[in-house]
Image (tube, rainbow, N blue to C red; front, side, top):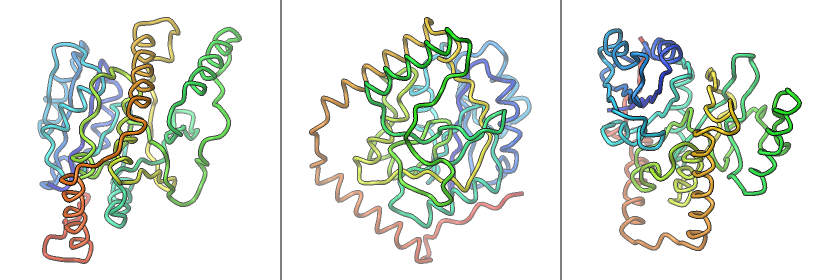
Length: 296
């Protein structure tokens, strides 16, 4: 299997419907599987997905399990050499996917990549970011409180990455709304951390990919649409905001505890070296070369 597309959703059929429509060019491709994990939606997302898109594998949860657990459910059954995590409020194209796959094929050191994302107003979103810091999050909370009080839009913190660059570049992490992952990198880094219900599981995963010896890239020349239905941005004092804060505290604690950790397991290192040799053989056009996905 060349590619596994993994979607998750919670009461987001009005977005998911358009996302699945944008993936129609993949649904009958024998080298691709599309997996949808539904987090106990009450808007018939799972039922409608089965009815309109019988090619999609649907997993239904009885309760909202959170982002990490739901994505891991899809990752566990995925068989593709590349794993494409997408939010249900994204819309993609054959061109964008082909370009992302071409980049990953040409750069075997890349364990994961993301791309440029634009929103409903056409603005470019901050989809690649430096790793979260306590100071940065405190400043962000202050900006949100000021914006709520003034009734204005939340300002982004200056700095970070140049989203208008013309060439791919390495970043700390790309947000989980669109991550194309090399399967081998996921096997070494492991699944998403299920202690994190909602954010920053994407930063944590990218950190572990980098610790595994791979690189994380942002591709500014490739674009997809992202409605960005951010759950924690609507109300400051809500359950989802509390869960997000809880995830951040856990992330900072975990990063502190593992700050001096080193990957010394020789079995992991030998496994990665062997797999890199396989990739190299494929890139040289050997008999095991991965076939290209053709749009239909």
